[in-house]
Image (tube, rainbow, N blue to C red; front, side, top):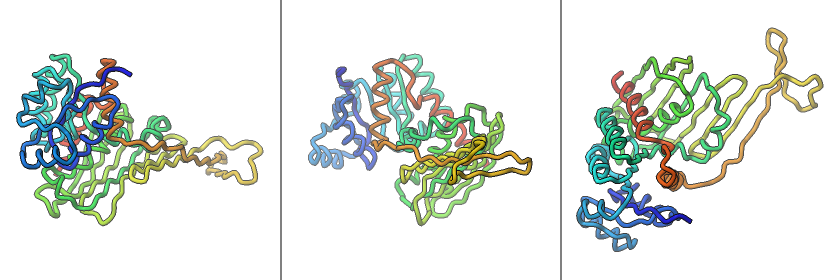
Length: 322
């Protein structure tokens, strides 16, 4: 086993505490400690869980090789910039920053410092998406629904940056083409920014992605459907299930239970159903440990700062439609 990489966490809110727990369990990271802007909360967490609480950010930065930023989006840029300037690798929760200009600056700074950065687009590491990934090939139509019950914890940004950005990133990871047109609408119901939105992305290669996100729903749904030539792939991120429907030329002598369709031209196709095995794993731990692997091998992370910036660029194209 390689020597563990020293890491510190900025932010000990709901998600920050999850990161702290998983990093403490990790075989790849040595959790040095954390910093939170609220001393009373930091002291309580340190007392309850035994993590080292740092009273000053610079102390923590000097003690680690990697910083994990799990703070409100509006603080991401300054914290990541400070960490990179101190020669640290940076893991940033999504979205990468509050503005595209800030994200581009971080990309340039990381390159100039020879440091790596990764964005926490956790659905890339969802076991269902990982199981389905090899089956998704040149999709031509994608439909995604991401519905959640209201939670005031994410309302510092619009539903686009809070929820839809997960699907924007997933779509960009499988559609290797440029977005050429964006249409969208959204409605603010409870927050000052849209709480429910729909976007239609059109790509240069002809693919179209229809994305819907809501944080005021009565049920939870996180599901994407990928339609491609001779196949349909359904990914249920919430239930961790994958369904694949494939079509192939019908055999000359199909079995008694074979499902055969004949089109208007008389061409017969056989429908095949498949449910690939989904190996259970913790997506947050998987993404963090993939970053450790990227650091050790000095290779581009699965969700690089550039990938995080690309998702943010499309998110703002959507937001600018309102």
